[in-house]
Image (cartoon, rainbow, N blue to C red; front, side):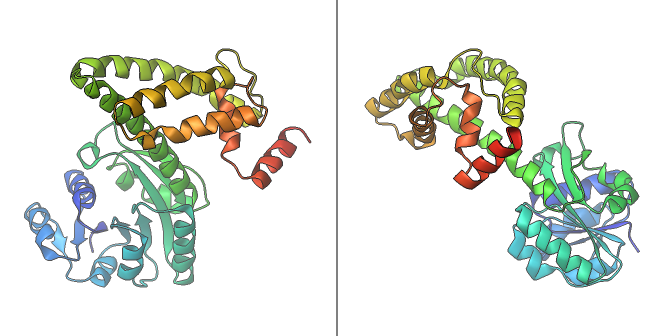
Length: 294
């Protein structure tokens, strides 16, 4: 038997299999289309012709497919195996797959990869895991080949929550940068010349995150600097400048609407952190308020 099987050899799956081979592990690989197995076979990987064959070839199987539907179509019951699902998933999907695995005497670990393929196996990469803690410890040395291991708890859905939260923050940053770049280029200014200033500004603004996180956890949104009202008054200039240049404001308009709603709801003198509570439904917001101030 191999040490590990890798199911799914897209860009990320191939990087995962490559990192395992680089670490000296014996690896069996499988992909729905066979063409992607050749390069790994040349490096010493064994090639399974079926997903079931790959699962039977090793005690632990790393699954990295396009989505949850592909995982469901691929997996078969092989009792005694540990599944490490690194496919991008929702918490509900991972919880359902953990139940599926448990009913078939299989162990389940969910994972969320915080890296692009070229980062796998480098100090910059880390992976969230949740689910069976014992399985994580048994296979920790193998999983560390991909990057730093971050265990988020026994609930199989926790890794996906962390993964999606970090991706949400990333896409928010990219969305802001893309709108900024469109605004700059509409004036005929080279974006490359302004990008270092944008990067410096964003880096400086991350210094506010610890205080905002504490405010969200505690429910104390007392403003120590700019209030929501001040930012709500200024925000329309951002939208007007884009509109006057024929830009699509779709990436930034929702933030302006949220600021206005916060002011209308009586939060004008609060810190920007209060907007996190505005994103919850009424029931969840009331529950949070009761926990903070029973």
